[in-house]
Image (cartoon, rainbow, N blue to C red; front, side):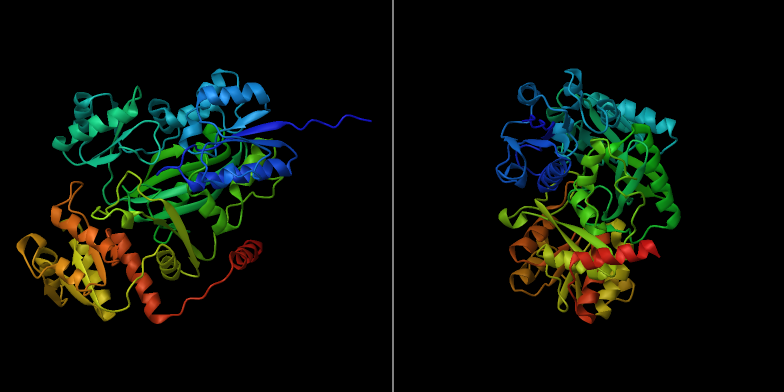
Length: 528
């Protein structure tokens, strides 16, 4: 009797313990990798230590090692199992950080090489690559202590984005507007960064942030999706709401983004997935970050375009080609998908809901429909934010936002809402012909917005922060919206999107279709 052929083994490294910054999106990718290995006739070995994930279910992979994601533990498993190779792309930053160490120990890293991963992760090597490709990057530098950071910040100018190297979820990342705050945040970043330098970037105020997911086989590269953040740059991509396709960018900017993405994919010889984050300001495209791995947005993009990117990426790592898998052209959907984040604020009474560079979300939802307003509305409903169709709107925004808030307030007034504001924002609105009821500031006594919230007389709050260290009045207002379950937004872009959603809610009835119907529409469009 002939011997049964022994199946080759592949190890998939998961994301490790569940925490903010690294969660279910990466687990989705790990599961799809396991399914792809099964389809290709290989033994899938999952290494992960999170009991709350599908990747650690008994029937997801052929073998499961419930072990920490460290060099020592992973090497013990590799020495025992002797796999064909190891996949590090699907578990987020934790397994990616092991790539160089594993390569030095002779492990075959499947997909994008460890050297290419190092180019994207190492600040100096990354900068050199961007200069070679003639791509823009915000002015930046590195530091190990406050004195060095002070010099870098002086050279590139405030505001600056301070962040540790090799971390996930934007941990200890901050936007710093002056030297007095810099020391405090540098100390925090240094604790997290360890022996790696602290990264200091010029922060581009009022820029539009864009995420791009790409798949490649080393020779052919295809963009899976280009997503425009609804909030301005500076909010962590894991927290930001995003739209696919983009809703406000010009065709020329989109082409610049595509070309830059393909240039970097070719240079890094990407095999598998790659994520790029851009900032667009004054018609210029700046590269913020490149991750030669699966990103949080891969499940969202896959569902929006109807292509299982993580599964295809796994097959590419095994030697297949995009042409062989029949995915060679970017799909631009003829409908809009919006990703919205879900936050745990209602579990923490008194917490400030303001978003920033450090990730706070614990999940995400998706809205999909024919246009942006409808898709955005669905995403808000799914995230638990019930937008009002009548009542009172309280508006209080920072000076930089007062010009833009006028049109938003006018639109709300036209839809029948009553506008309430404190003196600073209120006087701007009055000068522009908007009827406003003035309220005392919280610190000035009653009646103020907090009193009206308690009485159920505020249905929507638009409050943008005055700075990275917000005033106590603002914190109280934003924490009360959670206590009393009031719809709110803390950015101008979010306020504009909210108005679009309310308009749909007032004028139309929403319908629901299965994803497959949208995907069929895509197939028809791409054939025509």
